[in-house]
Length: 142
Image (cartoon, rainbow, N blue to C red; front, side):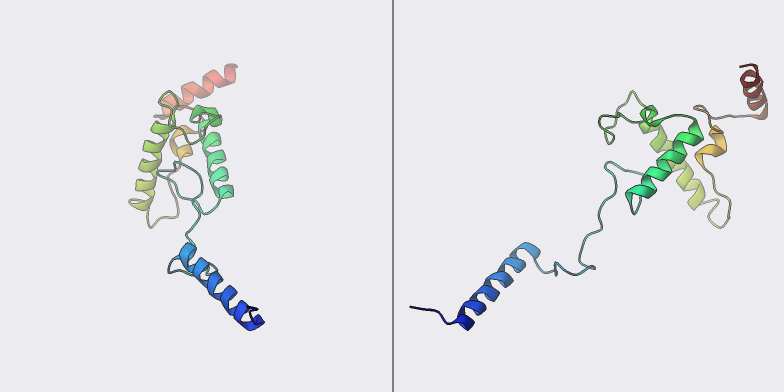
């Protein structure tokens, strides 16, 4: 038995429709609204970014604010890994603190707290003017 071309086309259309329904469920695969937002970065628990460039720029700012490089917090062979020997877990706590301050106390202000506010480009935060002056004197000697 030979199928007429329009019967074959109808069968192909039905098969395609069934396939789309099976893999797509009740959402349209071609709809922008139906697509889930892509997650940027792995194991981000405090920070949220729309794209990788923004994440990398933020991290670059952190390294400058603390005067460190990536391996201060990250295992360079496995960036998402939480290694207790590194500073990532402590950084998360302080990022949560900074976020809380900026969304709370500083919510309606143009000025915001950053890591640089306390660290001033150093691994350890500067806690007083006297401490800062002592550090600056030592740096001037070197």
